[in-house]
Image (cartoon, rainbow, N blue to C red; front, side):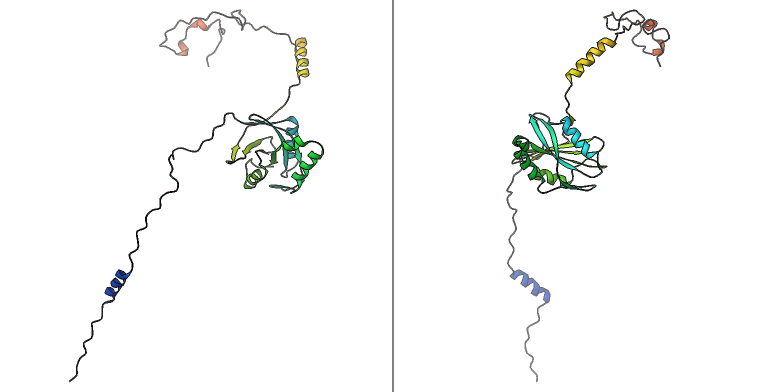
Length: 264
C-alpha cells in the first residue's frame, strides 16, 4: 500500500504578487514645494516711461560722410562716430571710417581698428574727441532696415554708458536705436533721427533785400469790393433751417461768389 505525502497546495501567482506588493514600503506622498517667488501683480505688460523723448541729430558733416560712404558701394560698410549729448538730444558730429572686411550682407571691423583710432586721437591731443566715440553706424545696401543678431551683439560689445546705433539704406532712410548700460540695460529702438543744419543768416538777409527790390505786393479784391484781410460783417442767410437742400438755398450767396457759382 502506497502512502501519499501531504503536499501543500501551490499558491496562485496572483496571490504571490499581491503579497509582494504589500511587503513593499508605501511611498510617501510628494508634497508641492513652497514657491521661492510670490507674484503680487501679474496684470498688464511691462512699461517704461521717459521724461523726454530722445532724439538723434546728424550734423551736416556726419550726414554727408555716412550717406556718402553708404551710397558709394553695394557692399555693407560700418563706421564709428563722435556724439555730443545735451539732455535727451544726441548729436553725431562726425564719423570715422576704419579698416574692415565687407561683403554684400555683412561687414567686420578689424580687431585693432578701434584701439588704433583711440590711440591716434589721444596722440593728436584730441582726448575729448576720443571720449565721445559712442556711435556705431552701418549700411544695409538693397535691404530693409533691421537689427540682426550680429548687430545686437556688436551693440553690446561697444556699449559703455550709452551707445547710439544707426543703420541706413541707399534711399537716404535710417533706423536708430540707443542702448543704455547699467545694472538694468535698456534698448530704445526707432529713435527719431534728423539732419541738423545751420541757417546762413547772411544769405537770409540777402534774400530779404532781394525780395524788397523785386517783389511788388498785389492787393486781392473780391466782387463786393473789400480786401481779403479787412474785417467785414457776416452775411445773413434767410432760409428754413429744416430744409438744407443745396438746390433750394436762397440767393443770398449771389454777389459773394458771383452769379455763375456752381455747387458741384
